[in-house]
Image (cartoon, rainbow, N blue to C red; front, top):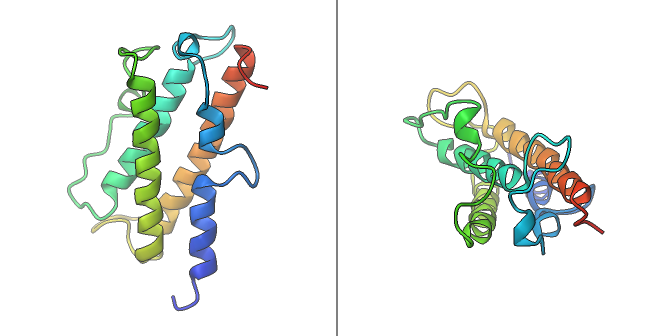
Length: 156
């Protein structure tokens, strides 16, 4: 599509901006390590589980783009971490770094790929479908992270 730059810019902004809500960096910044695996009363997940779910899902979308041999993860088990808390002290930061790296890789896909082409050979969906889905998914779970932080007294 010859004049698709505005669409590409909007898609990239959906992944990183804070035009309609806090962005990823704001949502995960400065959360005390003691709260990473803490479950707030009435909440279904911990901040760690929400963060890892976002990372795993975004990585899965990136892995399947252009890959006819992609194996779908088992839902819901493989889309969530096995534990409520990080197993190592640096796991939170590593998950954040991996999420950011995958965001950057998705932005590169947005800048170069045929947005209206198939996600991968044999796929039913076009790339634009997957990109909009992950932007929507991330926005939903960013809200979850912020709500969890509020419930845990760690959001101003």
